[in-house]
Length: 87
Image (cartoon, rainbow, N blue to C red; front, side):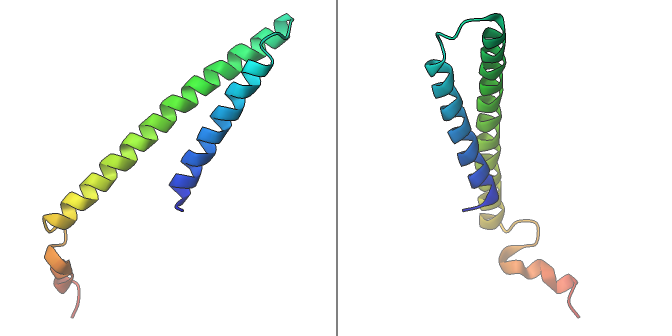
């Protein structure tokens, strides 16, 4: 598993656990508890947006890599571009 996939998986697990914690503590009283809940809820929303952006960029990067490979890419089909750098 790549580092990007591990990061995405970890983020999803943190979001899930945080949402569960918010649900479990929904009856907690006090201004401090409410302020913490609001901050955590905001952080969860931001993390979800980041995860969606990361996933979209990963998919787009994979599409570009496939397109480069299929169309010969920047170094030409079969790596022929290397001939310019080798003696």
